[in-house]
Image (cartoon, rainbow, N blue to C red; front, side):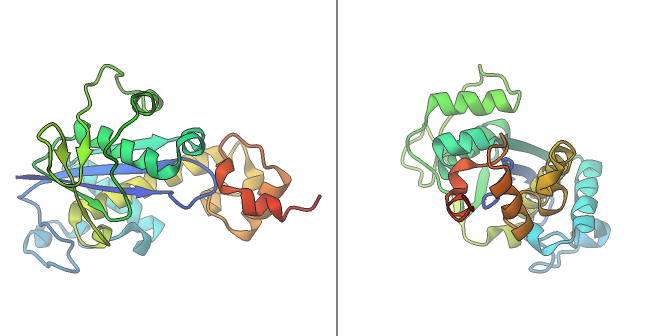
Length: 236
């Protein structure tokens, strides 16, 4: 049995991409995180005992988890979606399409996503092509769409569960890896745009970040559809 856990980071940020991660593990791994299921497996894999929702881990612990995943050979994949696509299609639509891409990259017998991510029944071929291009994936991939309820054999069944990112080991790992990768990118972007403080706020709406946005609202990495309230209060 293989299980694919999927989670996103960066949904509420004002700048930078939204990132979706998928981690595929076998039933040789515990299904649940250590704080819920202290399985004996963790005794031989102590570095995984800290794994849970990435928001509950320090930056140092998240990076430690990523190193453990890389050393273990666990299968995972990370997808980025630009602020341009978020503005054009909406973040929920983008995430739904990203799930479609991810489950085709990492096929598994069971697929579980965090409850915040919704799945559409209709998909845009154009958006799928854009996502593949942004992530340097082959545009010739044949993508089988996803569905929450298994009503059609031509769809891939996906389970959705609330707060799953602090429950399932695979989803918690996906959350953590996605967070590390996105933070690394925001720190890199901050070198060219230090006025926004992305190295520290990672694109989220801190007061200093909002002030910087009011002064420089036209950066390509800003999500323009997220800025209406901030710019509305900007001095003329």
